[in-house]
Image (cartoon, rainbow, N blue to C red; front, side, top):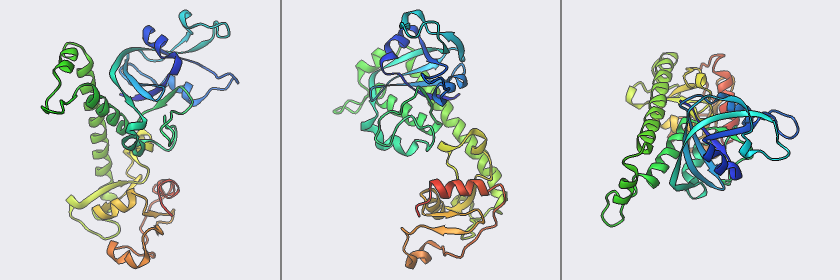
Length: 306
């Protein structure tokens, strides 16, 4: 199962009534944009979050994969007659309480990918039509949807609001949300488990910087994070290093990095007099492989805080 965010704006109501999303194959300049071509990637069973004017207003399930189709007649305008495009049929679930992206952006921002993010750094939606939604971001959106639309807590009694339960207990919304969250979490768990199993022997089952060997304290640290990686990169053991908890936190947050030669780089945000506290020093070097090199370079360019 994949997830996407569709930026609909004025087309939302028409497309919801038709149970579809539809996009031209090319933009007005005749170019095929990534946000339009992504329609081809949608498969039956995928999830789509619908963004309209600052809010996630619905979640839908794809009933079909992508089809080549003309714009539906009810959506036609004089300048778009007989235009071919991409169409996906969906089962829409409109939210009683939309997610206001700006008000939840502190939760959303850390999960946005560097490339092809549906949202800008100011919480506004990016221009374009369809964007990928990584599993971590999808889980957060599903949790927010559940908090606002299912687990509405009575402030005085701290129990489910009866009205919400009565409105939803006989429809398919709650099972769909539960299934979505479960499948997303399972995909991450299995992917990270496979990544760790492949990573451990590459680094002799110990932290590459302090040589701690206690398994409970070791972390399979991604160089290119899950949110930014393609599926094969998420399970590629070359996309990371084995680190203890402390060094993992330094690496994940960009306070240390490795260059293409395996040399350790330490952020200027860590005072040199504190290096011993963190069991690091500027002359450290690890035995990286050629396969590590592109991932180390990506991390140093995109995560490291120089």
